[in-house]
Image (cartoon, rainbow over all chains, first blue to last red; front, side, top):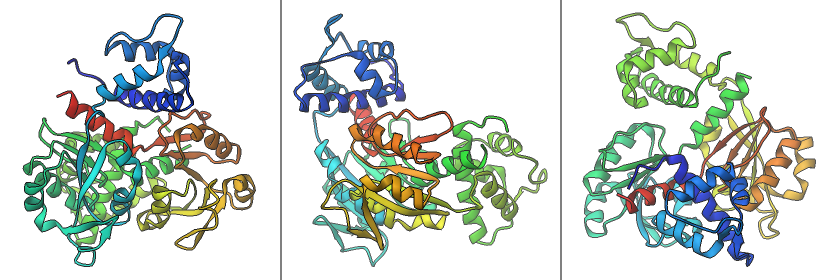
Length: 206
Length: 206
């Protein structure tokens, strides 16, 4: 398959959410204009994004909501479930385990780790925090598709290396560090503090 | 001031974290190579990023850790505190209020809102959840610098419009929607589910 830009994938996710709301309200078709508004783009871009993956909808009739939603879930790999391990059981790590939105979309957090003796043994929604020293043995028994890193910046690379060595092929990194991973491993970064600092930068430099 | 790319600002934040760790360990100088490793870039890029904001360090001696950290905090607007309002008191909204990392870096969450009667009146770290119907009156009395949107996608634009009308100049959006805001308002998006779906996309299409 041809290389698809991150920004395209992001818009597909936004279109899917909009389609699901439409489905929920009982609408049968949706226009590219309506999808464009939600995706923050133009209807020409919507048509281009979708044509990339095949032929959808009929000119003048809009897109069939149910069919397009199903196809987008296939494209985004959302027709199966994924097992996730979270490393770091602080406020954010704990909230991720308890957040129902992930499970609803097929992302099951099946393990959480920390190095802090005060956190090891605690449970979040019935999931016990394991000692990060046991990461390799736990993942050998219960393989995961994705690792979520929520540790301090200076520990993040070591954790990433250990997750990769344990066979993890996709990493979501919350730590304030730019991680190096092999080409075959996908990496996405989420950093709340960095986003806030990008905002404070604009407020300070306007 | 010249337009600075988002990617540059992001690297400045990463450099700052690295410098603060170095400061903490008592190091007086740091090389551009060391900063480059943490920022996921080259030492040439580090020198370019920093030269943009003035002259730092001496050839061959590296950068003075304390001075450079102080200058980066100035550049990033981190020498003052910011007041934040969070709209949406679910698991993620609640975790944000309780997360100490923001306060440590100067971001104080001073208000949290929800429309759910079951959530209004609850407290997170002593901060009471207010009815979102009172958003305008609360922010009139207690102005904030930034708004954080943690509501469902279909409600996000209305909340953004209300925050902007209330004078908010910077928005951090967690909702799965691409928001439209006036040019003078800064907007950053954090969407955990979208990042996970970008990862599932790569796993499904490898």
